[in-house]
Length: 217
Ligand code: DGP
Ligand code: NA
Ligand code: NA
Image 1 (cartoon, rainbow, N blue to C red):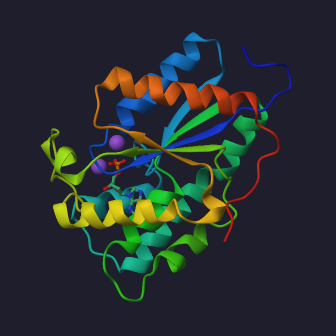
Image 2 (cartoon, rainbow, N blue to C red):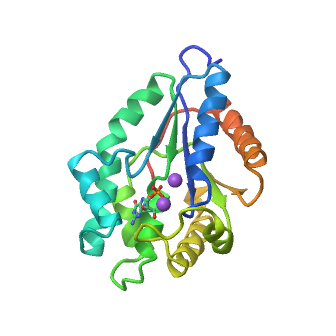
């Protein structure tokens, strides 16, 4: 049970397509509820993709519209900014917010397109100032294993070549000193083992939250 007055934690789950993020977020959400923590589970792009920006993103991901690489990047980022204040409010209220994809996906997917004018550095800038996660769990899986899981190949980024670049860039984020909140989880194992590996650092992180800061340059 959360102590009175303590804020909730901001916990982000990242990884390749088909790494099992959504299932693990759901399991984590249920475990925290069962332990009587106030908890919320959201995802980016937003689940129903129902805001005007969400609709544009959805249409783009389904291949139904074309957009300049920078333009779609800024829309993904704007979708996070739309929700930033409500995340801050929930956390201040003692709610632990679990987020399925966040700025790390944002920067890495866009920078993986191979557009010479869209570097990882450029892609990170619109994320600067968003609420900084207390913990980011990177579900690590090989592109081969991800491709074996169901439903692969439906959306725009779900190609082997793209997923390899995404994985390499995710791993390069780990080397940046200001991203020390990232924790790598081996997601190639059975679901319940992965869930256990996730729950432990999350509970630890929830005990130690202090003031929430912004994502840094
Ligand atoms: P999901 O439903 O979580 O599998 O995400 C849909 C796809 O959108 C997935 O291939 C990853 C990609 N994606 C998610 N967030 C971002 C973002 O901020 N920027 C870009 N370029 N792609 C993103
Ligand atoms: Na996906
Ligand atoms: Na997902």
